[in-house]
Image 1 (cartoon, rainbow, N blue to C red):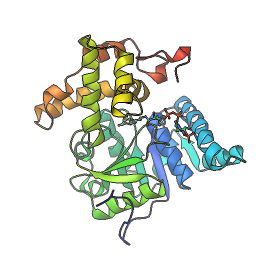
Image 2 (cartoon, rainbow, N blue to C red; image 1 turned 90 degrees about the vertical axis):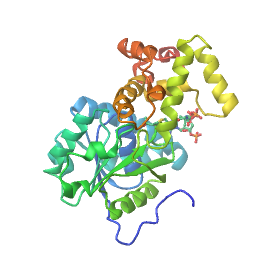
Image 3 (cartoon, rainbow, N blue to C red; image 1 turned 180 degrees about the vertical axis):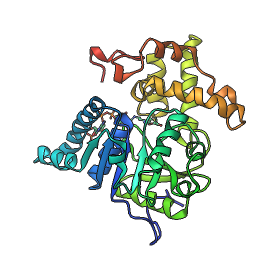
Length: 309
Ligand code: 3HC
């Protein structure tokens, strides 16, 4: 069978209004692709400054898309897409009309659970809740929600840069209803993405393979086997990857990979993934403590203040 794109049953729930928590790289990207698909979007974060930064990044990215989709009037294209996005820092206001609430906040289980518990009390009883977690189990994120909401809870995992990467992983939680999975598959198609159904196991499909690969690249460097540049060139020209592992570290953010390997320690203890595969890298820990977390900081494995793309 092909990818699990669209094709939901006639009973699929309608999603017209999405609320996204977290205006960072992922949340902003999700808000953008939803707005480009003509959905009503509410983007929310903890303060106005974060929302302002997020909207600025979205506007730049929409302009890049507009150059291809509406070359004669990029400005009007940008205005139309941004016109579909409302912002607020008030969580209650943010979710009151949502058919789907997606969280894209930092990879911290307690934080995500607390956020969903709070939203459960103010969102419509029929609203679907989804997590964009990269590395936590969907079952763990939803575990503290009331039973009725757990039936409407699933994983909806996008890839960076969200406006470009075609894939969405749809992950069924322990109690997710079929109609919710169907609605998410239909939504992914509407956002011009290809959906695959992925298992609720650490890293789902993509990160289960990608994180150990990136950590092993960091270990190669720690062992002094090869340089950053040579490892990146080798994987691009020898394996056809669009980016080398260190370029990918920088684009996604070293802090994100660190959170993931920390979180997976517990999953290794639970026997869900081999400990050796996700052993934290001292090099990555050191770089994160020095603030060299990648593109968003101007410095990671490469220096972006000196013009590297
Ligand atoms: N917004 C809109 N458009 C963008 C964009 C953005 N942020 N970034 C790139 N683009 C568009 C460009 O406009 C360009 O379009 P065109 O070819 O039609 O002119 C196209 O994408 C290619 O961009 P560039 O020419 O600037 O650069 P590249 O050809 O090097 O492509 C890339 C950039 C798409 C990022 C490519 O290098 C790539 O696919 N890299 C791998 C990314 C990857 O592995 N992502 C997964 C990360 S893991 C993850 O996300 C999991 C999560 O849980 C953390």
